[in-house]
Image (tube, rainbow, N blue to C red):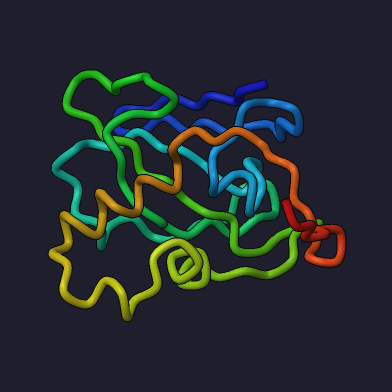
Amino acid sequence: ADSRVQGPTIKRTCRAAEPDAKSNRIFTRFGSDRFLFVMVYKDIEEGHLKAFQLCGRKFVYLLCKRDCDGEKPKGGYVIAVFFAEEGPGLAPLRVHQVRGWHLPVHLALGMSIQKYSERFKLAFSSTDRTLTLDPHLIHIVED
């Protein structure tokens, strides 16, 4: 269930954990409940998106995107994505570790900020779950 709070400049949406829902790479890796999507004016400077506490969790700015599950914000807004770095029931994990998992800095050094942002958004693309086999379960046979 979504919890929505509206004000003159923001709308916060908390996602409930969805263990059987169609997922994306970043939710599969870190859990959908660690992400908070906040609609902000598109002209806001990223430096103004400060960390904050909500429900005992410390949320830190991760990135901005133009849509959320196909919904495009209206009225000159974009969606700022915040990540819960710590809180009850969470193993501490920093935003820089999330960024490094998806797109290591050494691979992004030559990218413009816009290109890095577009590549990072791929972490939110849909995925289908697959079966993982441990190497000891694979037996090679000759044809």
